[in-house]
Length: 160
Image 1 (cartoon, rainbow, N blue to C red):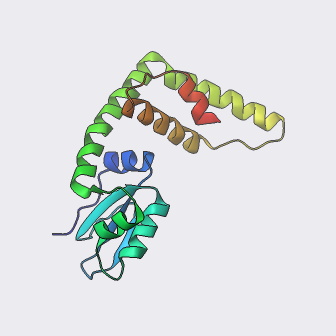
Image 2: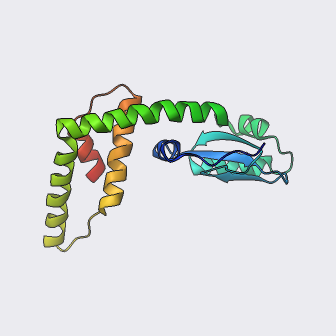
């Protein structure tokens, strides 16, 4: 049975942690991707470089696990990655609600505006809002994953 497309929450979580899939299509093609929808099987690792290396090494044999072992790349099954993503996405949603409630998102928006204006005044470019917000979400996700607290230092990480 082909793998279903990732839901939005799982996709965002997996992207936040730089997870990439190595998949095998129904035709037997081994490939690296961010969403293995339609593939027959998939495993996940961190980083596009490792995913590409494993996919390339497994193309002839279609042995993703063996290729990953030879390359010393840690894999997670598709099912486990989705289960973890679902649980962590819920935790991230709760953390974002907490960030909203405690004023972290308001602080982020104010800091973004001030830094963007300062950069513009000095003739420099500044990161776009969508990129900065994605960085903040990644920082929040990292704090949640490591059991850390939501602090204003996350804003600095997102805007630097």
